Length: 312
Image 1: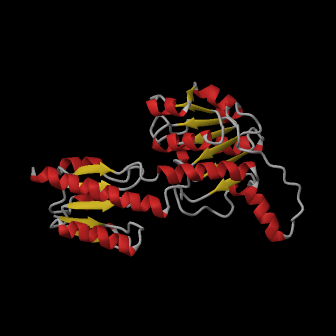
Image 2: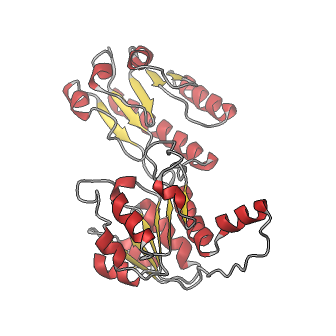
Image 3: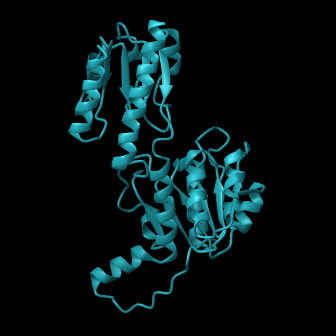
């Protein structure tokens, strides 16, 4: 079998070399490109003769899929797969396999670090030190015993709940599908409006679906305590942006932490960048050395299982 990773997998060379060798020992070829293709034509060229292809967030449209000769498996090593033409894959008998869970610790850690950074005004204090304002009277708040609300108790939400529970934080949550592990962690499920009213910090970890797009509205944000914070390390469209900006301007909430930009750059005059009480990062939650190494192992396992199923 020929397996092609169309784009880099962001792990050290020695780790990649070991992965390539493990496939070679099993009689297969694993080609890993170290740059992203510059066009759809180049993407098609890379996977034209592949039995299995690996992508992260690279778009895989119908025009690329239809140019492949032997492709039967696409492994999507990314939190979502809405950049793959699933209909075209289905028509050509290409199985799409989605790798999940590898970045749960990393994303949850970023959410908790944003909570602490906002409560302690760490960004503002850091900037003050760099401009000579060393003596400002910073009086922060502890995360300890704050009520943390979580929307979405999947892999990341559960890890975030465990982390803040270790700081004696009561955890309340909203999720249409309760899970046993949440109860074991001590999470209390509540209705959505109650979650907004009671949470000192609200952390969003739900996927983007037609039901969740725009679900966090100005009206819900207005129910929060004026001392509360909202964290979103998931997908931007879950929060209505105009509603969030209005809530910040009217001081309905104390601040926000956002790792949700769908693009890696923001315009310098973007309204959110004018708030000192907002932390914004360019979707880095899943980007740690350890999560990418776990991702590679999960990719290997998924492909080898698929190869074995084909031979059976």
